[in-house]
Length: 250
Length: 250
Image 1 (cartoon, each protein chain N blue to C red):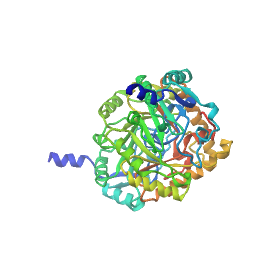
Image 2 (cartoon, chains in turn yellow, brown):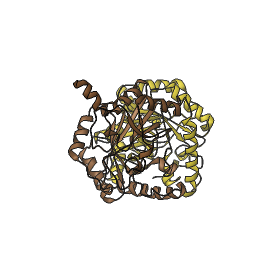
Image 3 (tube, chains in turn cyan, red):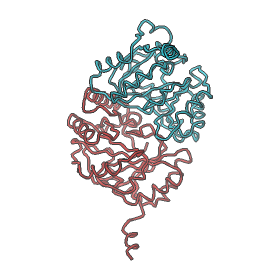
Image 4 (tube, chains in turn yellow, blue):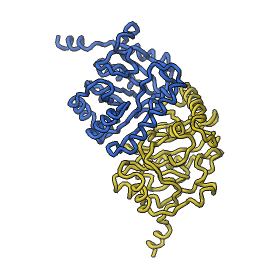
């Protein structure tokens, strides 16, 4: 009975908003990687500049499909054929979903690698199965507050030789930059990525967006290059917005 | 006497053309990394589209300085202060210089990490000391021929658990793309990067160069995404040319 109850308490179906690819990963430690995307619905945050607000603000609610891991795999193969070897789980915050574990298992069984990005507000045991895990605590401009004790716990559970995980902070302004330095100082041994933020989410013309994003990236480079608290770091743009602007599903 | 002869046969001074930074690394496995650059003179290749031809075509000859490892370190600190933790050795082909070993040792003693890129035409024992090593065999458009047996030997000596090295191929056209697939197929377990080439080396205006580079990157993405022989790969631009165009020393 207990076993049955436990099984019932973890739902099997996964709330999915988008499945697309293959395309290139645009951010962080896996930048440039040829990958498929699975975007889940739901988030415990509501960042001021979220570029996927439809995953949590109600506007995408009608597009949510409750899919089994097998159905998700079938759709990945139907869209991507056999031309891919990597799948990115994105959100929303996929870390809200304990049932993702069985999807990850299925992908691994097929020899695929799996990446995931989350803000680091919740732990899931399946974090330990992720091949490329990015923790992305949110800076002051987001309006969100980081629970440092939760993040400490997650970082500490992930810290072991050979595990590939990284920290990433999106930076819009000086206060965000200091937050980035604070995160890097707190976890100095974890590979660290600073990413230039995009606050022009309503610009529909990629050619108009690009010069602005370039300028923001140059600003971030200039600030990080002279920053003594940010020594062992990467500075990256959101590469996909340079190529496709704010277009969804690419 | 033998020992003296051996010492004499390995010169101590290093032919240096540029020392600059900190800046962001624009390519491959270390893309975005905050780093200092040391560019050495001399190359055994003469690629048709080389973006650093001054290192081997005679035009930079008057700018070569013969520096000791200590002098190079002093200059790195004089320019970069204490705001960096990573140094990239670039060329030319730095793998022509056995004496780089003592520079790498000195940098490591200071807690700095070291990256190196080479075409994979020569082995040096100090390859085993490099933190981020990129082997970049040259595609048909370069006019160069790869000695596969030499490359096989280098890849095999580098292949051991925990070693961070990668392969990178610059791609200008379809023949280059097939060469990239051939390299990836020959060494399927080595992380692989395809990089969009820049053949407009005389364009002085970054704003005019960017749309062209963007178009070339999009072309490469399109070709790789549907390519079944290029599954486990990264596709990247030369990020620094997007930001600074063909400008040297940034």
